[in-house]
Image (cartoon, rainbow, N blue to C red; front, side, top):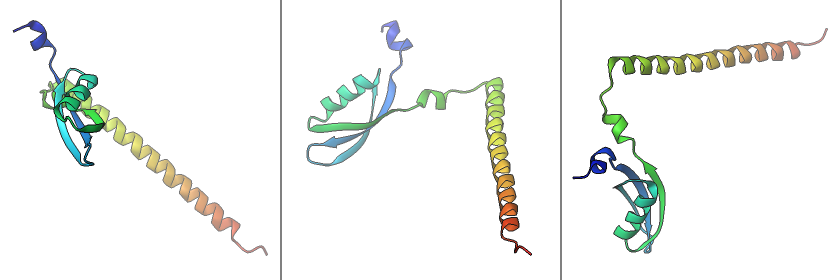
Length: 111
């Protein structure tokens, strides 16, 4: 076994393949890069008219065990995203309230 067979793991690619008969097939292949994945799909499905939606799966990241420090950083990053979203929602509510007050003032009858 060569060192590059161990060090360079293959990536999993998902694809939607359109066959010449008009049928669509969803499949996944393992390859070094997207070009190789496309070539492999064309070879596997001899009647391929096109390969679309070729996306790389993040399997390695999902199955890797994270350290407590990595989990803490991820938790803080997630919290930051939630707080930014809450800030945007609050600003939108305040702007809406202000706009509604202006509409009420504008629609008051002039005496």
